[in-house]
Length: 119
Image (tube, rainbow, N blue to C red; front, side, top):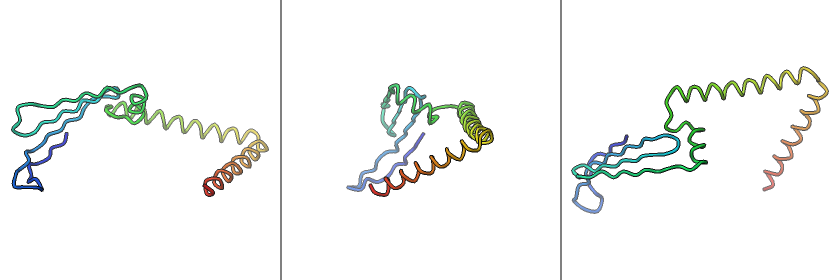
């Protein structure tokens, strides 16, 4: 919810009435409501999102409740932890393979950095 107070317009002596805006909805749709003080009508705009926008909003947590955001964040933290611990365990199993993977990743990173600097 956002409320803009009544104010003078820059081009004259008129006064703009206060403006109320409400935005609510979920990942698949957004409802925007606008009301100008003293008006007898309300403007309602409904935006239906497509598949990609819905997935993006789910990823960002737009319009989600606090429990949903905490669940998604805890799942993301778990995935990162499992990935890092898996790499550590893999390195501990075979040191020669880890050294080779390290050399490969450093050379790829260096190559991408040099390409990026040149562009």
